[in-house]
Length: 297
Length: 127
Image (cartoon, rainbow over all chains, first blue to last red; front, side, top):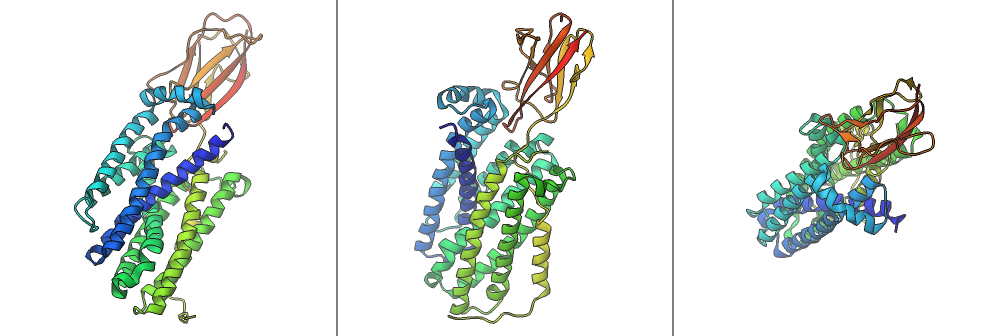
């Protein structure tokens, strides 16, 4: 069991990132499709967000155990389990866990209230709950060392949100929306893609600005870490994948979205979106690995 | 197969490439160990019997999981007192009893508020 703990913890981080991004993605997709979505589209999106919420809940319930394991430096199940009450009552991570429970419950309630048609009233409570969840994740990360509501923490919060918007919107669009366009028609697909393209561009801009800030803060001017450490090499892999995703995204935008709607172009768009989505999933996995790797000094 | 011919590179495509290049310097630090910044008595120093060991770390500590232990030359802890983290969350102290001359080992465990654990050891001499 002991050896599997770090791997399980990385897996939980990846699943939480992925689940969060997909919930954001289904919410955006629902809003962009608006009333043009058929009930089949709405059900597809709804099912996806239900599955993601279940995954988020499981990871959330397991989190205090992982925190206890990390803080105590032990991996045996029982002794770590006995530390969980101390974690919940006596640490910062414990207080944040309670706050996270409330936000997650609010999100699940909002999901429950969502009408079969997307973009209904419950969208706004869901957006608020997602915002709170992202803020809590920023507050439990290393960025919180600079203090609550510090620029570092706010920047990390925006970074998390922008990543989720980008990855979530692309993944959901590629697998749950775009391939089903014959159901809602090509002009809806084009309107949808325009919104997707604009939103992703904004998300990317925020991602870059907050990322550069984190780099300036975190690297302390030692760019060598990128080449000399295990952590730096993983980061280089991540950066290359991000560049590849951006390239595919721009290809989709300029070869498809900016051209007149035609079914041949739509087929290419669906294919390009799929490639981008697969790369996006790998980026999330690499980020989870990165977050659990010691950068060294 | 339907192929749509490529257009020439547009300035906006270049903007995307620029964005990608900027991403080449982005990082999101998710993990970092709390390190020892300064300590009294300092590592490898020779001092008069100190009243306490005080260590400042690079980040805020989790009081219930962080600790300092001081051992004498034969490896026995010199005090039953527990170390404490005060209002300054980066500072951890351990009150010491009257210390006889000799070599002592300080062992510290620092758990950061983002849940990462690090530890270390150093020696000092009481004259």
